[in-house]
Amino acid sequence: MTASDQSSSSSAASEHRFFLVATWILAIVTVSGFVMQLAMGRSSFEVPLPYHLHAFVFMSFIGLYVTQVTLVTRANIALHRRLGQIAAIWIPLMLALGTWLGFVVLRKSGGPFFFGRSEFLVVNLFHLGAFAALASAALKLRNRPDWHKRLMFGAMATVSIPGYARLLPLPLFIPYAYPAMFMAAALFPLAGMVMDKRVHGRIHPAWWWSLLLPLALMALGEAVHSTGFAYDWVAQFTAGHPGGERPDEAFLPPDFSM
Image (cartoon, rainbow, N blue to C red; front, side, top):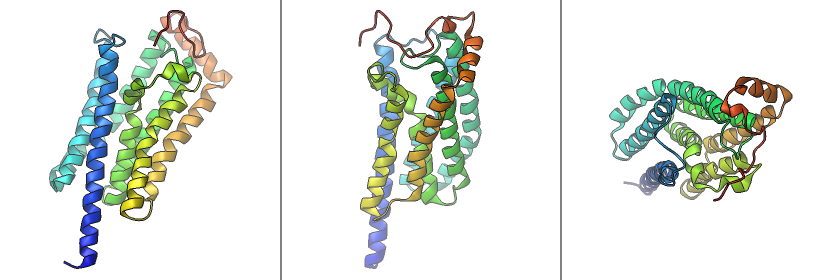
């Protein structure tokens, strides 16, 4: 084996190790966010069916993604590709359930108090769009592994935001809770950039898409939700429901404590 071959093999091993470790960290942190809220009594299994369907499909995607990354590190590419076919079905299903649950929550509670009411709905829809764009691009470029793995990791980091955001003291970030969440998510593609720079000497352009697309769509969602049309539509949609009784803007409940 030549020195060039040894260097290439070492780089590939380092890259595989990064994606395996980073993926497991991402999955563990995401699940921990939901578990912590459940343990603190802020979440409950006593919720309507859409919540359960949403949880099952989204958690299944996390499990699927972790499994696929693990298979690649074990050189089981054939099974990795077969399981990847599930993603083509799962991603549209996630979009549908994520959108459905957003509207259900909007009427049920108006969204978490640290988000504005229209902000919760609109930014959440743009967030789902960012995930779908990155994941769809990753699937389309599955024959280009350098792009595929980075874009899919970016999609995973994006869709996992609601999980690890539950570990953040979001009420303290009012009225910038969403920017705080998305900046936390940016740490994952930034870590990928550092890995690329150290291992390959340059940053792959897929990381820039994984970093900037979710931030750009979040900013666009913030701009759209601030329009009079969004406020009026949300007010009409929630009228007569519990979600219509809360303030339009983010707020701290009178009995709030961290």
